[in-house]
Length: 335
Image (cartoon, rainbow, N blue to C red):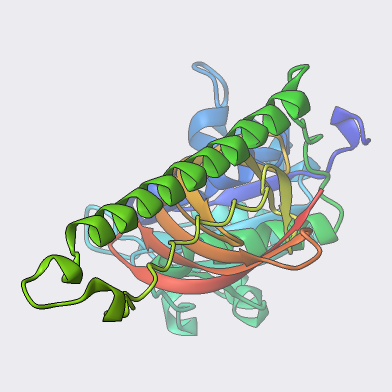
């Protein structure tokens, strides 16, 4: 694993009046995967009394990638109504100029349906910005878009924090099988009691309804042909889904604890940070669940277990904190 001094670093440039909330949300997502010292966001990194100019210059000297967060008001406006980006002392302008001069990989990240500015809206020193490939983050696809951005950083050499896998307490497997053994025994007992009750009910019915007891009717000549009562089949025991499940992109691991047909779920990202919790049920080989994903919203999921008991295929209905709802498939494999 790279040491602190050798880890790749990310500088995030943004205008406070434009995208402070969106940028903070993005940084929260990044810090769930990467080390804090890999991400520089000026507001929170600068200590009181530190020279702002020197601190930014030092951070830009050591960073490998710069995200230029661009929203609808990125150009800015000073107190006189002039574009802030045109001022030679504008910090957003200085950050990007320094990154371009030093050959730092600069990625424009578009927020809230923003587009790159026109050439007439920026100084000539920032014209190269307009030739850079952009990346858009939509509120409707926030998790998907940020996950893809994180995956891109990993692909170019950003080392995620070491994943911490929770240790199961001793006796977990024994307890699990004991629970299912008791559940199976309960099903058998209920079935026996049901059949006994059905036989008794049928016998009472035959005894009560005696055609031979009616005047003029010979009971020996009457055929008793009541239809047999069909016993109800007991519900099949649920499949065992307890354990650790990986998503297809390896962004997170879903840990499921099972007690009979009820489930507790916990989502943990690649850095070992819990990102959500929820509950669910299992019937046969089908599961249904609902979870609260932190800093995102609610997801409802349904899936079926494959015959090899190693794969869950299903779909998620995601309702994020901005009120948007969308559906996406998921594919989990057992650890």
